[in-house]
Length: 200
Image 1 (cartoon, rainbow, N blue to C red):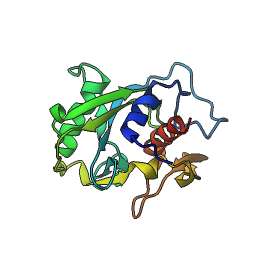
Image 2 (image 1 turned 180 degrees about the vertical axis):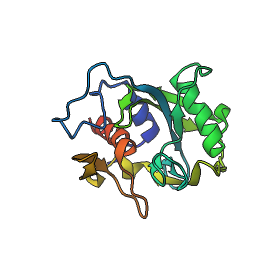
Image 3 (image 1 turned 45 degrees about the horizontal axis):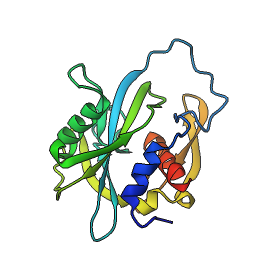
Image 4 (image 1 turned 90 degrees about the horizontal axis):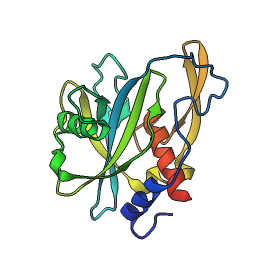
């Protein structure tokens, strides 16, 4: 159940110690190579408030992309050498991908990086959009920008565990579907971690 002030609840959840997450959480038999080199990345989890209650903004990646075409994702990407850190990278990527001005975002907090099966360490940065925002998706990267009620993606009952064969092995992962949108993988895992912390 959502608390009276869900944004305050998120701030509080971000201060709680939670176990580290990865794409391997539901696959404990996976043996990861020692000395593997992971690429640093960051995503912005953009939140809005309004008459319909708090929302989480997500993107549908372009179907023309080489990696993860058509998947649901937070705006984000690799941390460049010119970025001041994960938060700076997340804000830069959100501005590039969905036209979100960084000065309109109040960062609520971050937590430990999430390891993906594609070799990234992704730091989630949670940000509250202060003013009205009209998305401007970058045509080469984003097909659609949409929002999901925060109450939907912080309700543990909405999450399922599914699986598919990946590189010859069955991999299990969280999904939290919303209407026509199939939210899964790292995006769903980060949202599941938020739901877990808010339920504490």
